[in-house]
Image (tube, rainbow, N blue to C red; front, side):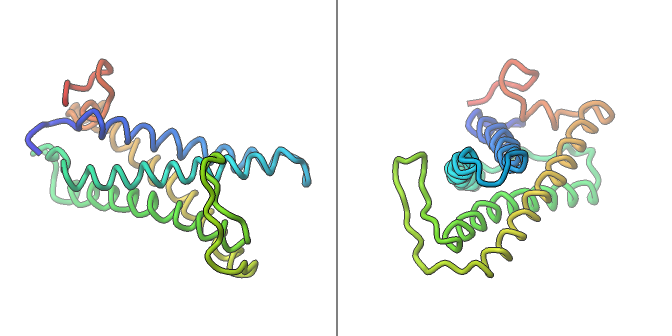
Length: 185
């Protein structure tokens, strides 16, 4: 990529994925505050599925866009271990962003539920329910959800380190226009 910043679309996807992950995590743990059998839990579950499918679509778009547009080069001042850590960190984030919705889809189907995207369309389970396997998938889904919070926290910490300690453009090249990021198409 010739530019030293991300495109507007890449920035939009970055921050939208961040917001969706936080929102989905909040929905999940907000559900735990309600009493068992509360009808609101079912609404939260349907919203979680719909927003999870939205996340999956945005992740796909982000991966395709990254493949087409690439990414800005890392600063020359970064050492080889820092570059490796940055690459590994991004790989972990992408792997989790892919794994979480895939596991969520499998979990939904293994519970015997159909996938519904805000009621616009529904995809029935392509195989019979299996509660035992669903429990295992739920644990993996939860583990990955917790893992992405940790990975995103490390990612944000690294960006803040670059901004405030190293004083390079790592953070600003991903900020929305007008927030310190440079202009990009």
